[in-house]
Image (tube, rainbow, N blue to C red):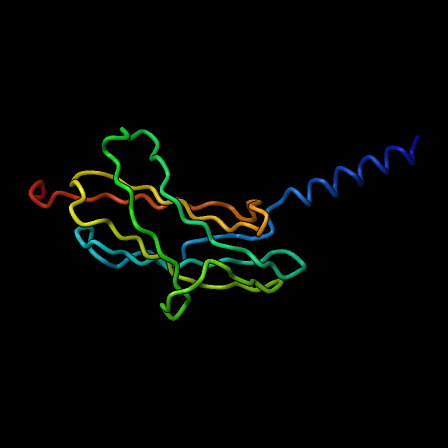
Length: 149
């Protein structure tokens, strides 16, 4: 009976560890641009908490903002840049125990409606499409400068 309990506990421990995200995504620096600017750059950091290197792609998608009517939302253009602000493919290699910095540029299209919102979700994914990190959502308001006092 003790052997069975031990095997069961080890099995649950392995499943628990495999279910844990090995990569941690965080915003290292927000945009310095004023809200009325059409482009905003964010410095993000992807940390590998695991024991092996991870080869992942960065997914950036427009998501529906919670508690905001769909008609009050605008889709943005999202781009990925390396830490030198050079255009980069979505693929990133993060060595074990290390972190990699990169930039996300969010741009609103010309003619976007004012007083609308955008929610852009960023996450690291494996080649097979498995989510490998926590997700981060950046909420952006397209302000109407006429409403400011």
